[in-house]
Image (cartoon, rainbow, N blue to C red):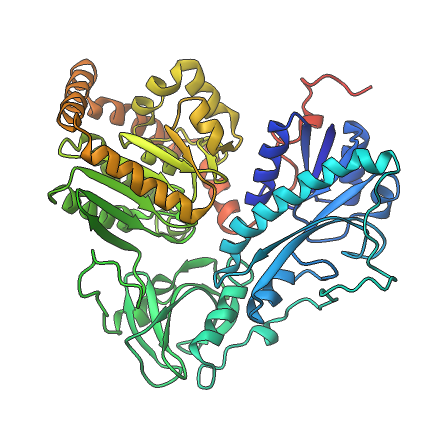
Length: 571
């Protein structure tokens, strides 16, 4: 089927649906929702049999929905209406939620229902729920709606009419959530309430608040079970986060956005104030402590060391890389056979930290420091000859993060995550993380060229099929963790483990003799230096637009196939 995606951006949900429908044999093109006239032009060019709207911030114009079947993916239960569906569900403590695929019409979110998929609503950040449960439910809902199209055409099935009928539904029309609805009362709100409010605004738009007498928006909250103080008091700091007391405990807040800037780690957003606060260090950084917040932890089970690192949105600044490198080098000293780099639940890594680079006195210098810190980490993983190493990707990865994972001996990925193993979308960056050493042996020279030039997402299954990664495990997070433990244990207790380790050392020595890692790194960094300091400002423009969330002025041609002049014209 010829399907046009009409979307505000190519976000994680849109990427997952795009990849899924292409794998099912559909011809999919994408148009960003910039203006009604632009949408009308795209429809005229592509002549779609179906329009799918996975992520919109405004209604589809009547000139489109009155002439074409348009299915809208709404992150709410049947009958739910309004743009803040998921926000309200999280803040009000709903225990179950869903996604509805409905037909666009005169009233927003009120059209006939083509499919609905329910799921348990865990306590979590909105961005995390959207990226996981909502995206999976949307995938199932859209595929079900497509299956029903033939039945609908044949007159054997009809979508559910909700508006104006007596069909009992749980959902209802709710207004856009305003900052007044999100407001935190630090003196009277309990920890659970504060967490729900910040979780409901996580990603966007955040919760408007006042810190150190200055207005800002807060994101990225975690509970603290041991430390407390006077309600409303900012008690301490740790790495990137502040600890603020509530009525019955305290909450760590990891990121803030001041009124004149963009989202930053909290202690950087209020750097002067952070310097005056006491540090609240962990008793032992390596012991996973669920009673507090930590972004790096280590768990050892028999002959396996699990190194967890959970950096917000997968972004790794210079210090993140340095701290993770120190943790990895410490893990190498442990009497284990296998080191599993487990990443976080939502992201493994997305490479260098563009927001930290943007706020630096010299973005070029900070870019250079950041990529060198990433390379230091990648090189340490490659050179590890005391253990077998595994990257276990439970969450998404992009750009340098994809190749940092490939620095390990084996890469295991969870079904359903999305990978973006390319750099070019960020102003034609060349990329480093030793990708020129790691990628071609896995996929061949032509395969490497396709991955780096294609600029499109890759599913977990596709990454294994092309040879980039090694194994794809269950989509369920719990099952994935169990499979990782089982397979890591098999590696550690294998009778031929000494031979495997010896073979790894032999291959590394042979590779080093042909071309040293230092030479690969120098070649890549010579290209990156041109990106950072050269005459072409594309990287700096692209980074600025990304960090400041500048609205798209057009749809990139690698997404809008109907606008590609090389494509066969539509009759």
